[in-house]
Image 1 (cartoon, rainbow, N blue to C red):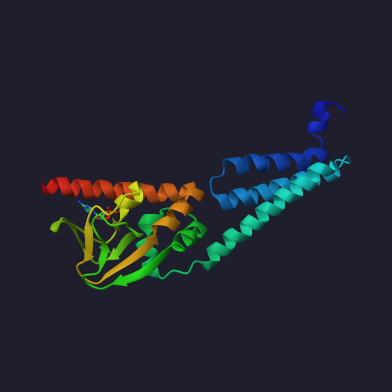
Image 2 (tube, helix red, strand yellow):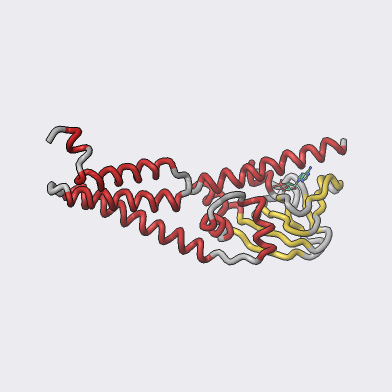
Length: 224
Ligand SMILES: Nc1ncnc2c1ncn2[C@@H]1O[C@@H]2COP(=O)(O)O[C@H]2[C@H]1O
């Protein structure tokens, strides 16, 4: 059989399906669908090897290992997705931070954070001191003071602790709650580990932080 006969034969169909699905998986950016496509594609490849009559056992064994790895990872993603339970207002608060991240990634993000209700006068950051949390303000307003002087207010939809998170330095200001404030407090150290592991999460978060810092800078210079 020459090359073209073999290429267009019925026996080659599982092979074509396998490589077409694997090619599609290379185009996917959502990790869940990418892994699922990889499992289907590699599965077809095994069928192709078995039907071709010249079963290549080292390839079949390695293919099976790749499928197993992807299935385990898919299981972990599904576990994360189903573990995510949010009230409607929590979902609304999160929307600006998470953008179009997958539910499983949102669940991972939330594992580094805690919902808190802060009483008036609670100190979120103390000037020149290390900052433990990157705090997203969901409701209420905070006062930002430098050397005792009020320089800004940070309210709903903005971060407190974003400068230290981005630079690794101490707090640039003392921030206190001016009223009862509802926040989502991310542990900075845990969040950095997660950002190193998942570039999509890192990019969504840093995009939000960058936009927020630009808004703060604009507001500060407008007041000068
Ligand atoms: N000029 C400002 N306008 C708004 N927020 C500020 C200003 N200066 C400092 N902050 C906030 O106060 C926080 C203190 O801790 P960070 O320096 O980590 O991050 C800082 C910002 O979130």
